[in-house]
Structures are given as C-alpha cells and as structure tokens.
Length: 108
Image (tube, rainbow, N blue to C red):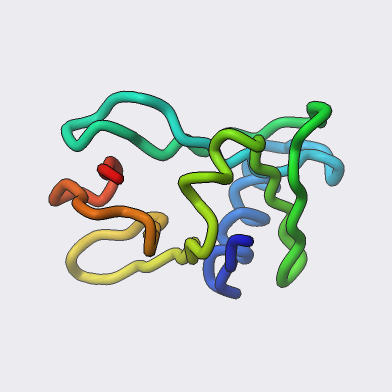
C-alpha cells in the first residue's frame, strides 16, 4: 500500500504531540485536485474513520487513506527530510508521471 519511513513516523508523532492531539488521532493522507501539476497531496490529523478507509501503521505512526486517494498513492513512500535545502515531508510516488518543483503536486 504505502510505505512510511522511520523519519516520517517520528515527525508525525512529534507534530501530534506538539499540537496536543490525543493518541488516537491519526494522519489522513489524501489526494485533491489542484496544484500546478493537477493533483496535490493533503495531510491532516483526524480521529474519525470513514467506511472505505484503509489503515497503515509503521514505526508507531498510524496513517489512514480514503479509497479514492489510494488509487493514486499505491506504492508511495512518505518520508521526512531535514537539511540545508529545507525540510518537510517528501512523497516518492511511482504513479506520478510529472511533479512540480516543490513536490507538493503531481500528475498521473
């Protein structure tokens, strides 16, 4: 389904803690129309499961994806990088045929 690196899991849990969110909250990863390449990634904390949601837990972090978004995200790796060139979540999506320079939007 989706891979989560240890670095991304640590950052997800750190942000949840910084925002004083309950342990039961999870990161919802979704795809929305928009962005300079046609689709964009959306990350939000949530605590309500929907009927067709898919769940993934890795390295202590829980990720939930709705069934429509999953079609665009199968095989993706979510990572978190920090360094001199900036920091943030990185989406390595094998389904993307093109992506913008910032990596926040993509085309299929």
